[in-house]
Image 1 (cartoon, one colour):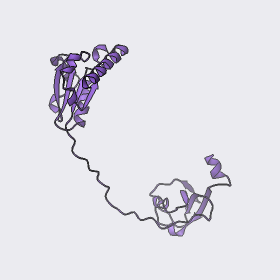
Image 2 (tube, helix red, strand yellow):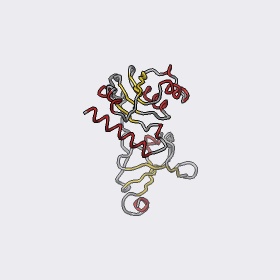
Image 3 (cartoon, one colour):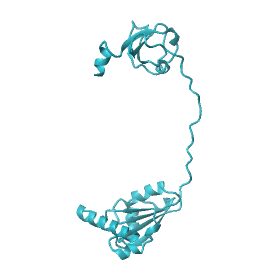
Image 4 (cartoon, one colour):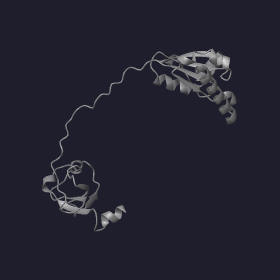
Length: 214
């Protein structure tokens, strides 16, 4: 349909015309000089009238060059004075300082170190990441270090370890659930081989947390 509109005798067509007032102007400025046409190329006065479609923005129109445009008719367009763009400064959106947050991770998965590093880069200084699972604390630290986590490079978050089973109500009740800004329920590593078990465990944890918070 586009080619039919351009190459047919109805709708817009190609027009080639010389505009002396555009000589010395870069093509990027020619592009915005025609309110009622779309410049798309140049017929060069040199090189035997070579036609260049979509020339470089920095191409400077020479004496005798003709501008190729797509327009409704040959008498419906004419170049206008180059629009003046007032230089200024973009508005600065006010972004207030982020407040420290308290995040809870329920469960343990193999890529915990990656999640911790992402949170450390995203959260405000003074934030806490509570890690609640049944993996012994000494094993957690070993796994995180083996995964590439450098505890000394954590700048914004403090890790808080709590032992417990995320599907046992009394263990969850031992946590200050109302104090967390976000709670992430992770597909536990212990059941990762079974999608059904992992989903069931995550759903059970979610329902227990919601019931406790009500």
